[in-house]
Length: 424
Image (tube, rainbow, N blue to C red; front, side, top):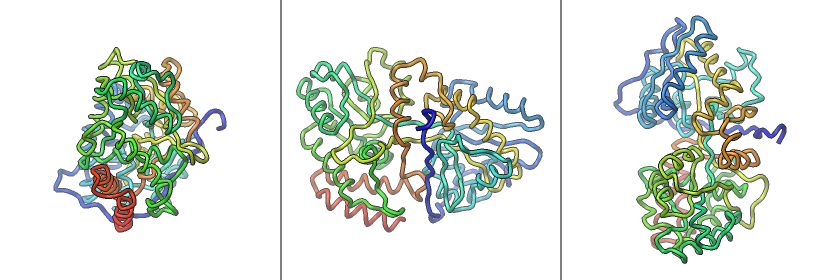
């Protein structure tokens, strides 16, 4: 790709049904924080970044934009989601919003998210360096600030003891590596597949990542296409791994943090995980020798491989009376230097395609991961879909039944297709 930068990806989605707001305390004040130059910025990022980092960035922004102040409204991810949903229903949104792509459609359907295309146009902003945008109903509603790529993590010690010298690049090699590990040490699982219905993002990160790595899609013209040969091939492959005893037991109850613990403790040789956990593994498991690689591909892989990602996205409230100032904050965070620093602090990859995080220059694992990221296409087809989490849950439920042996892959996909069609 030109200058080694990511290709531009725009995620499109139709308007979905409005999500119901719970009986939660509203955040912000009606119409944002008023027109006095004060911005409220609600997000879950501050607790997950180095202490003081986000506040320091806001201080830089305020110094460069006389008359604008930023109040950070920070909390855990789940609480942020609940408060934004409640605020959308009551029209009491903060000015600037930290967003997950899975929330965008539901919030946009309540007219809670401003049109970022219009704000960019009003500011004469050139969006050529934005790696991705998320559109709903023909307008950009979210811009990814930093991106958390998901790829294959492998315990090189476990593979080496099993006689495997290189990380697998194909499904066939992945099966062989997982089998060699289990044969050499039955106490070490080849792979961990989290399919908890309580936190069903394993469908996105650990199942569909195989599909997207092959350049394939779970949708056709925006509609569910779960009974395709490509999706069936992924499920057939996972069932085959399970039948050979290569997947850690208990998938139905495992969450993402469980697979992370299995890997960091040495009880699993391979997982699909976010590069955000690289530093965590080093801190919590200093003896763990691991490397990352692109997701293994199948025999029918076509085109540029997809790299699954999640983002810290940003948007502006439709009800804000300070949209011009709010956009200035978005533009500040997307600037090459600031965005590179954000990505470095978050252990992620930049939303500005020209930015390069410091970790990539200094760390072999992150350099390898960044090479995978740049050589692929960022993809997450759940971003922008209505009720994305429910879609994952319905798919996980059917896959669980298949792994339990109570239905076939064909039956699982037919049931999931019916459920998704009804939702979408």
